[in-house]
Image (cartoon, helix red, strand yellow):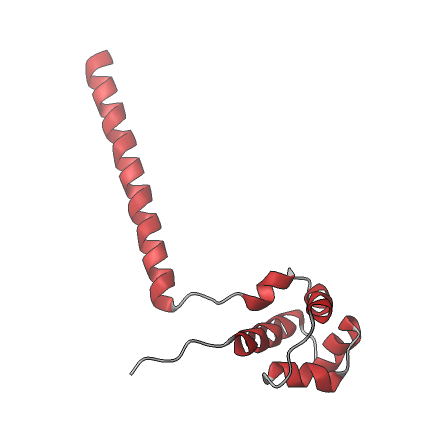
Length: 110
């Protein structure tokens, strides 16, 4: 059985909590910086409340991130590994093509 996709409230809650911790803020400090109550921050972080767009902007500003980043879903480890693999293969292909091109140019021009 697969795991359920996280809902928007859970994504928001996780991202606020993680970014708050990165900033070294308590819930109280984030609330103060965003101009909202500490209990409201706590309710958002447990997915019980959902802030208005204005409050989302203030929270993001207090955390020094863009508002859309509050809704970013980090890639799974498998997705991140696959992207890294594709990037490495692309870089290797490019380097091999450049080396072949130099070798051919040297042979015919040297």
